[in-house]
Each structure stands twice: as C-alpha cells, then as structure tokens.
Length: 111
Image (cartoon, rainbow, N blue to C red; front, side, top):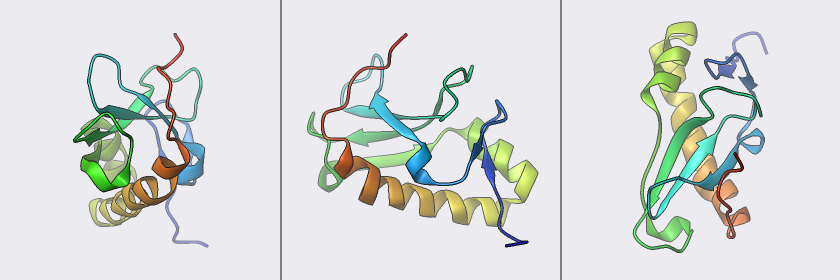
C-alpha cells in the first residue's frame, strides 16, 4: 500500500506491527510495564508504558497506556501528526487487547 506509514524508533528500527514489540516489567516502577523497541541494541529501548491499578497484568485494571513523547514526536515529524496519532492509538488498543493477555508472566529486562 502506497499510503501506509511505517513507524520507526529513533534508533532506526522499523515497527510494522504490535507483534514485533516486547513488554517487560518497568524498572523502578510498581505496576508498570514498558513497551520495548524490537531492536535488541536500541539505545532508547523503551518506547512506551502501561500502568496498572494492581500487580496483576490485566487489561481490565489498566489505568494508562502511552508511547513516550520522543517516539511519538519522531514519528509525527516523519509521517505527519494526524496519521501518526491515529496509528499510535490503534497500536495501543492492540497492545491492550493482544499483547497484554499473552504476557501474563512478565520478567524484568535483561541487562
């Protein structure tokens, strides 16, 4: 498709679908999950976060899900604000509906 935009981490890694992303427990934060760039050597690593009411990872107790501003801004500059906003919202919905249910037993990120 000619008009389909590709999201990209500032490290240069293209993100074509939510299935490429990884969820890990956020360091130093209770009840938060980091959305991690698929590039294993990315210097930024975290591109978003999901925050929960309790320790249980469940879409039913989700408080907030968002991409970090540098990731959103990078893509808005490259693809336009309207298209980027629409795609990022859809991705967050997919993360909550698809990735979270598959990742009940998250681990801390390896260093």
